[in-house]
Amino acid sequence: MTRHGKNCTAGAVYTYHEKRKDTAASGYGTQSIRLGKDAIKDFDCCCLSLQPCRDPVVTPDGYLYEKQAILEYILHQKTEIAKKMKTYEKQKKAQKSSMQVESKSEERQRVERFKSSENSIVSKPINPFTSGQNKDGETRRSQSSSGEASTAASAATSSQSLPSFWIPSLTPEAKPTLIKKPERYVCAVTRDVLGNSVPCSVLRPSGSVVTQECVEKLIKKDLTDPVTGDKLTDKDIIPLQRGGTGFAASGVDLSAKEARPVMQV
Image (cartoon, rainbow, N blue to C red; front, top):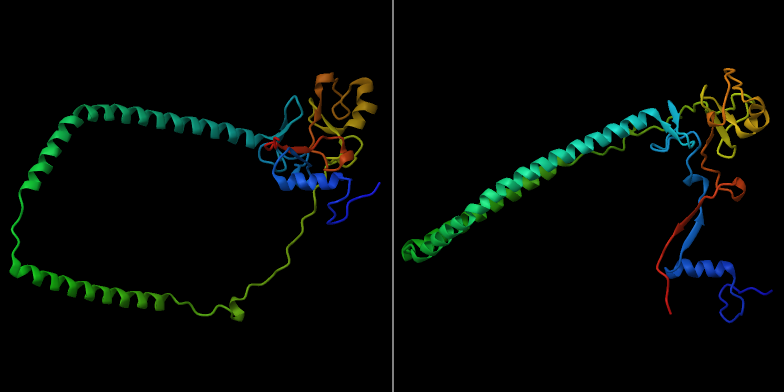
């Protein structure tokens, strides 16, 4: 089967790549893309703060949270509710005062209209001999004030000018940064490295994290916690939700879709 050339428009074949390219450029239709690794949180990160957990807690559905983040979220919600209640009380007081003001607004408007009409009737006499002198004095004062303002501005700009900072004593130095040892999580039983590509489970009594392979091959045989020796039930084994790796073979659906208007004929 033949394919289109780079700028070919006369061929009979419309490839999948050209269709996706034209769909993205047209602005119509639903765009779908598979998320990469940079857009996925790690399995040990909190679902609220998206940061690695130090004091983790897990839900019955397997979602991991930082205990401090949950408490901060609850306190934040309480604070927001208290702020909204204060705003509501202020609004009620303002509405009550506005109703009291509106009851007297008509009388005040009549008084203001009366004052404005009376003030427009009375006019002050103009002295033709002093009006010109006043205008000359005002122009001279404005010219002198503008000259003083320009002098002050030039002095301020000269005082704000800074000396050159490209001298050896002020040149920044690029010091080498110390690299910390990377933290790696391992299974509590098999010591296998844990990550987004490895399905994990949490044992409720001990809080240990083990691989799903360890659960299937070892723990489910006698339903005993290998760390503490306690008896387990099916509810005590919580599959931990993971974000995936971004590869299609990870077994996790990580496609993102954007619904856009459809072109109608």
